[in-house]
Amino acid sequence: MPAISDPSRRIVISVDMADYSKRNNWLQYEAQKDFHRIMDEAAEELAVDRPAWMQQQAGDGELAVLPAEASERALVAKLTPTLDKLLRQHNLGRSPAGRVRLRVAIHQGLVHLDGSNGFPGEAVVTVSRLVDSPVIKDALRNRFPHADVALIVSDQLYNDVVCQYHDLRPDLFQKVLAELPDKGFAQPAWLYVPNENAAQDGAREQSPRPDDPSPSEAGTSKPPPVQRWDHNKASGPTIFGNHGTQNLGRGPR
Image (cartoon, rainbow, N blue to C red; front, side, top):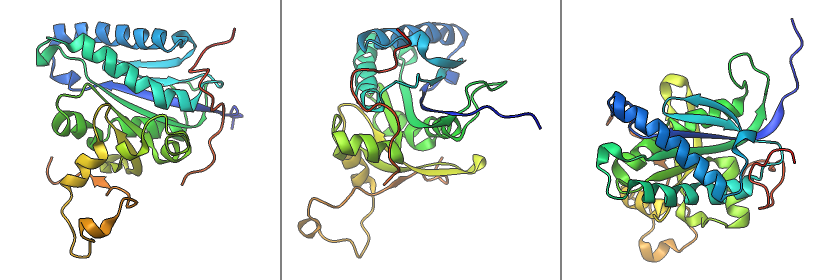
C-alpha cells in the first residue's frame, strides 16, 4: 500500500447558490458570472487573497480549503455579513429568477491537500453535507424568503468561536440537526441569517410540550430548541490555528 501524505488542519468553506437547478441555461450562465463576481468582491472587501484559497468549483458554488494561517474567528464573523450586503445590492430590483441567494457552511478539520480527485478528509465531507442539508435550504426557501444568505456552522465552531468571541451574537443562532439520511449523515449545527433572529423564529415553530415551563418560569438562560427537518413533509474540542482578526486567508507574502 502506498504511503499516505500527512493531512493539514484547515478551515473549509462550502458555498452554494439556492435554486440553481430551477434556472434555464441562460440564467445559470449569468448566475455563475454573478457568483464569482460577488465572491471576488467579498474577498476584496475583507482583504482576502482569493487565489490562496484552494478551490474546487461546481456549477452552483464552490468548496474552498483555506490557507493554514487563515482566521476562524474573522471568517465566521465577517464573511456572511459581507456577502449579505453585496447580495442585497446585487438583487435590488431583480426578478426572483434573477436573484442570487447563497448558502454558506463553515467547518474545520484535517484535510489531505494532494488528493487525486479533490480534498480527502472528514472536514470536507462534513461541510459539504452541512451546506446541502434540508434545514438550511428550508431557511432560505420558506422561513426567510427575503434573506439573501444563510450560514450554517458546525457545533465545534459555534462553541469555540461564536460563543467565545461574540463577534456575532450567539443568541441569534439556532441549534439545528443537519440530516441527510441517504448519506448516513446527522450532526448538530447552528444556523444564522443576517439581520434575522433564527433562534426566535425557530422557537415559535416548536410545539410546547406538557412538561415545558411557562414563559414566566422559563427565564432567559434556556437554550433554543433544536430545529429538526421533517422528512415526511418534504462543547467542542479546542480550535486550532490563528484566532485573530488580522488574517482571513491571505497567501504567502
